[in-house]
Image (tube, rainbow, N blue to C red; front, side, top):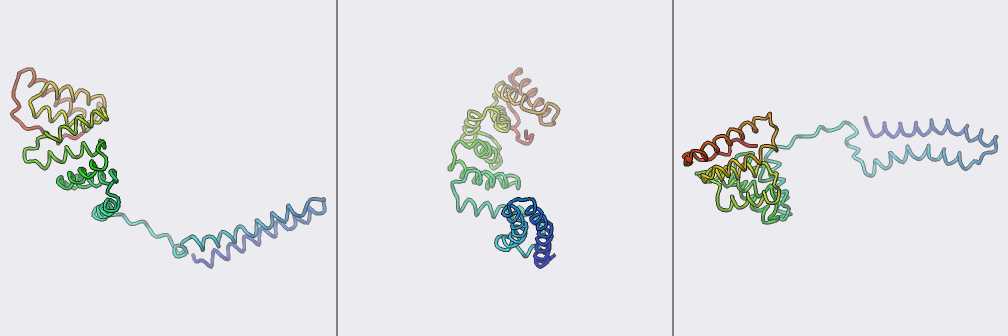
Amino acid sequence: MTLAFYLVAGAMLALALALLLVPLVRQGRRHGRSRAVFGLAVAIAVVVPLASVGIYLLVGTPSTLGGVEPAREMTVGEAIDQLLARVKDHPDDAEAWVLLGKTYAMLKQPADARSAYDHALKADARNVAAMVGWAEADSLVRTDHRIEGRALDLLQGAIAIEPDSQRALWLLGIAQFQQERYTEAAGTWRTLQPLLDPDSNVAHAVAQQIAVAEKRAAAGQPDTARGTIDGKP
């Protein structure tokens, strides 16, 4: 379809409405009704269709009248470029930094993810997603995968702000397990359990970790294995 089609269609609609309403005006006059009311109706019928075409010419996109262009899916690389441009122009946009960090984490680039989360924390020190994301990314960057130091502090701070943060509870339990604080690890994961779908694989994995932690706590067994963060809630 072309613009000419819409112009002709608008004119035909206006003409049809006018032919319909003009007899009503005449009939109204014969019954003593005011011509102004019917004149206004005719004016609206004529002006609105034509005006709508004019407005479209001013603010619309006539080139799309020939067919709607399908939306093109954005690639991950393009999404990262847009996020980088966003944070370059708005370095205090914590949410944009967090989204960038999550994107890098998805691409298994933990060092880049940690850097993005670090920028987010500089913009908003109480951003729970950034706190948890930094702790997880840091553990993945480390060769021993331990959660300690700043990472542990951030997790504890995140839970203080958002006690039902599932990811923070899971990671804090891992940190406690790594430090051979098995009773605390089991308690942290028990706090996590009611927040999970009881029929989910994650809930079953957490239940298994609780059993392992409680068994080691009861036996006083030292932690001979490193904690893992693979079982993601």
